[in-house]
Amino acid sequence: MDTTPRYSGLRIFREALRGHQGWERAWRDPAPKASYDVVIIGGGGHGLASAYYLARDHGIANVAVIEKSAIGLGNVGRNTTIVRSNYLYPENHHFYEKSLQLWEGLEQDLNFNVMMSQRGVLNLFHSDSQRDAAARRGNAMRLSGIDAELLDRHGVARYAPLVDMDNARFPVYGGLLQNRGGTARHDAVAWGFARGADRHGVDIIQHCEVTGIRREGGRVTGVETSRGFISARKIAIAVAGHSSHVAAMAGLRLPIESHKLQAFVSEGLKPMIDGVITFGAGHFYISQSDKGGLVFGGDIDRYNSYARRGSLPIVEDVMSEGIAMVPALSRVRVLRQWAGIMDMSMDGSPIIGKTPVGGLYLNGGWCYGGFKAIPGSGWCFAYTIAKDEPHPLNAALSLDRFRDGRMIDEKGAGPAPWAH
Ligand SMILES: Cc1cc2nc3c(=O)[nH]c(=O)nc-3n(C[C@H](O)[C@H](O)[C@H](O)COP(=O)(O)OP(=O)(O)OC[C@H]3O[C@@H](n4cnc5c(N)ncnc54)[C@H](O)[C@@H]3O)c2cc1C
Image (cartoon, rainbow, N blue to C red; front, side):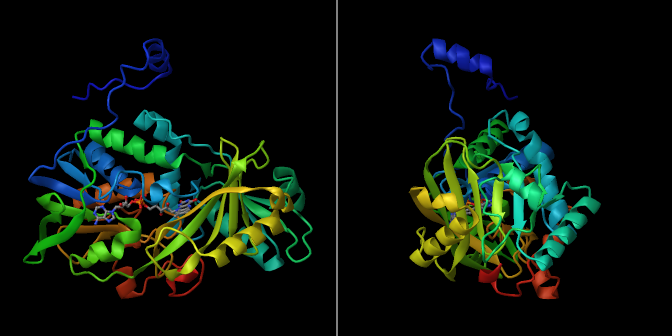
């Protein structure tokens, strides 16, 4: 039985009085065992959430999460933290809505402050045809019981007074608002799921790289790691930007390419942007963190790479789009910039499911939308691993849709990963 004390306001007060000497480790640092029921490769948001739900909902706690670095240093700690479920296609919006609903109760569930802030996500549009597309998407969401509101120009001006409504090239016609969308604190999500999984008995093994996947007679038998062989009945891949080369260890060639995506944070400023706002005439999005920094980004770098820095043309692109949308940004100084490695799928939608190799499961293809999916993906992936079949919410997000031609091309961009 879990006897770890819960976090609470009262405990913070008590610990403050005794010099913070009484805090226990948030999760253990166990040596890997020789064998597990399930080995999850990758201690990012998806791997940790999957382990948590496997233990909590399916009673499978003989699980190891194997992470080559320290947890939280991958994309889960490098993203711009936007959470939303405003997708057009039912295969996507039902799944992301489940995730958003889990986000809404996550702090109580994990007993961890993930700083979930439902401050709203507003997508601007700049032409009649874009308005039609936004209205169609909003209607599709509302028909599925998901909140969406179409704002006219006045509504946008009220919601985001600093937006340049009359930019000569890209005048704002209106926006599609999801009020329940917002942001959360990225690394707190990794820490919260790690602590939750650990409390249920999951071993989180850091600084241990998976270097091979052993197979026998069409089934997996375990993983080779930098700390020796670990046998496992089931192996789950959740390595985001490294999906292709980890899957290749089991002989699989995935419909995924790795690209990099940059993020930027400005100096701390007084509150100037309430919600998350996205520019519709290009690809730019912005929000303001609780510390006051503006957090923003744009498109991927559009060439394959495993480098976690970005190229200058994208920096120029992002800045010019930002200034076209909010001219006041031209006076702001950028404090930090970095990139993460994105697992871009051929149709821009994720993969959560079984693979042709017995006992091997795949969670990947997150493109730049995997942060918001963490609770929903962990929940569905745990179900799939435990029952050896997908949940109805991730049934369409299977790997074999690429073989069968059942694309979920939300953007209508065609079979080019860099275009999604
Ligand atoms: C700049 C940027 C902005 C983004 N903005 C958003 C956003 O606003 N909203 C949103 O929803 N999504 C966003 N994303 C996408 C989101 O961050 C990712 O889709 C998601 O975090 C990926 O899943 P993860 O957390 O499991 O990945 P990661 O945290 O990358 O976890 C994968 C882990 O696998 C480990 N690993 C890899 N290979 C091995 C191996 N061989 N052995 C052991 N471990 C291994 C890695 O070290 C890593 O820790 C953004 C991403 C970036 C880079």
